[in-house]
Length: 90
Ligand SMILES: [Zn+2]
Image (cartoon, rainbow, N blue to C red):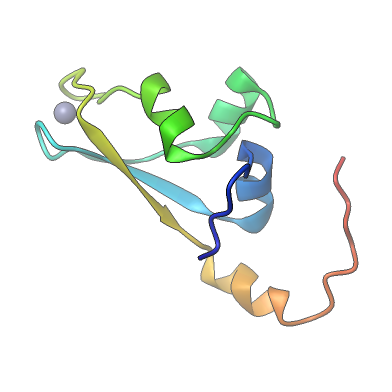
């Protein structure tokens, strides 16, 4: 499982992870703009579902019965096979 406890918005952006939000009420699906969330809540804000969900609302029906799907960027997984020496956390 690539999603680790304590993972932050910045770490998801760095890893190329995408979060898709799906509304249980109206079935609306939206890919979250992680950079927007980072700008709003800060790079160290938790990206765990339990922390993100209270901030989220369906853009279509304003419902709060939503789920989050985390999907790794496949190209970054390939890159992880190489040396991961550059630990450049700005
Ligand atoms: Zn909805």
